[in-house]
Length: 231
Image (cartoon, helix red, strand yellow):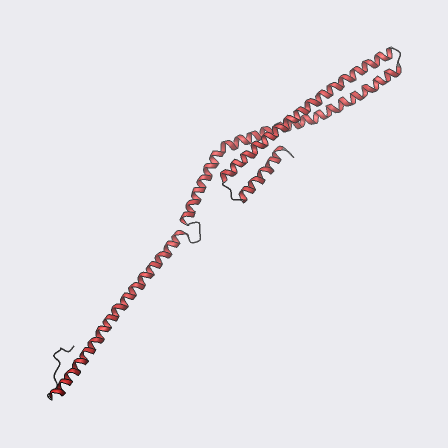
């Protein structure tokens, strides 16, 4: 798995966790940059380690190559001295050193390829960080604007079913209903007062008539007419 692959997994995990917790987008941006910087530092350490390993492999290859040359020279010297067995042993050691040198060279090629790949990834990661740094202010400003708009929507009630205007219209209808009920009550009271007056008017007329009849009986004279006008 490459450095960028590991970084991508790490960032996705952290971002998804923060989104799940409904974190501020600005915090998510900052956390992403922090993760990228940490990954960059880790990548530099990894690249440095791979470069050090390549240098060690190169030294081992060179050392064993020199040993192979030396054992070749000693084999020739031993043979010139008439020691065939010693020359054979020198050649055996020469072959071992040659095999080791070739092995280290093969591993060096693989390690060098890995180092080159890591360097490429490191440069790409560095470019990504620079890009994120340059875009951070814009992203933060957009997030702030979105937060302000969201706060306005929440404060005005437009983000809820019906919204603030619906609530206002409901209140207006409620007040109108109260006014209608008050007007109806006032009208009923007024009509009640008129009925009472009309009822009292009839009651007063009846009392007057009864009083006149009573006077007539008491005085033994003709019924006294009421001096109140009839209506």
